[in-house]
Image 1 (cartoon, rainbow, N blue to C red):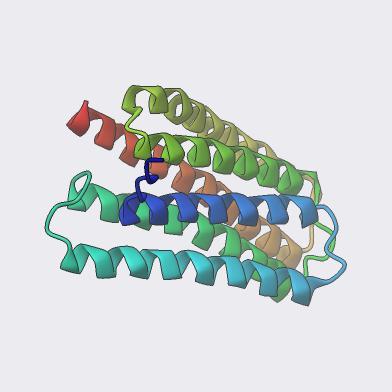
Image 2: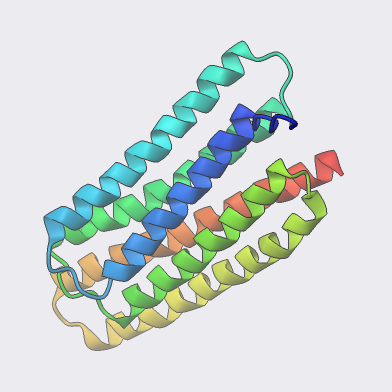
Amino acid sequence: MALKKKKDIFFESLESMANTVVQAADYFAQHAGSLNNMVEFTNQMKKYETECDNYTHTIIKELNKTFITPIERDDIMALATTLDDVLDGIEATASRFYMYNLTEPDQYIVQFAEIIRESAYEIQKAVHLLSQKKLLAIREYTIRLNDLENQGDELLRICIKNLFDTVTDPIELIKRKETYERLETTTDACEHVANRLESIIMRNS
């Protein structure tokens, strides 16, 4: 019986990062509509962020001691960084819920959470194809990620307009506006992952 070939440490770490992004986005979306236990929510999000940071450190450590890598070293590092940025964005939003005491998120926050969750799953599928060297198949997911980012842009325009139309308390307006913008920045981070994957496809196809 042939031994199963051990997966490359770089692809394995990138896949683990993508899996963690999905777990975090899932958890965030599940709780975005009702935050009964704010401390537990923010603590869990911080754990996901720390987990992703650890994978990034593993990649940096391995790059420093590996001469031949499966794809360009810069591409590995840039992809790890952009994946980490997605999780940083989700965690930063969660921390704002806590800082601003946003215990009753609105429909726009819930919609943003769903866009981010969908984006996370597209990222996961694409990154897993990377290790299988199915580069051209990745493009289906990068196109979808660009579309989801456009949805995030449109949602930001809608919710900011609604905010200024309906909210008169300046403090509440500032809190909501910054939260919406932080969420939209996270959808941008998902598109940056797509752009990095497109760059990898171009270099290696």
